[in-house]
Length: 150
Image (cartoon, rainbow, N blue to C red; front, side, top):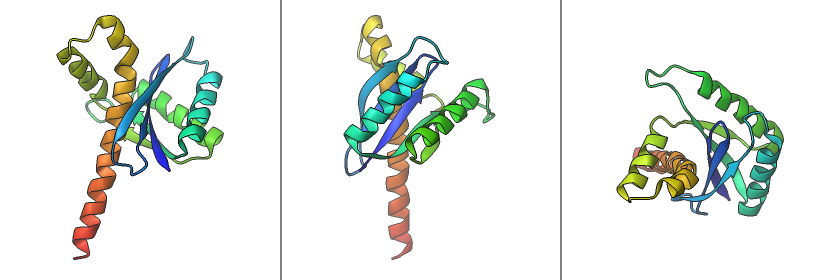
């Protein structure tokens, strides 16, 4: 079983999937829609990917403001999380994604990726950063639990 990471944007959703050991995140695709309110096809595609990759949990980027307050984008992510829970029946973890898109842009800029290509992959890379952060958290949590039992 795997974990899915999502970077939810106004008209795109970046998708990443963990490996079966839940150690690494790989970018899968960017789902695009015509407008922010057109979610049916987006949710259907996510469901297809859940089945294809045998996903057991979803990690959704939670774009808090830098001062830790909840803004409009975070509220929209909360709404999307609820859609995902109802539609898939899977647990959805909201994961602090502050600066993941900035980090994705920095990586792509360092690699001298063209603007066109950057726009195609930045959301997928942000999803990778979101999911990898969560996977690292799980790994560190396991290590701490093992240390506590020694």
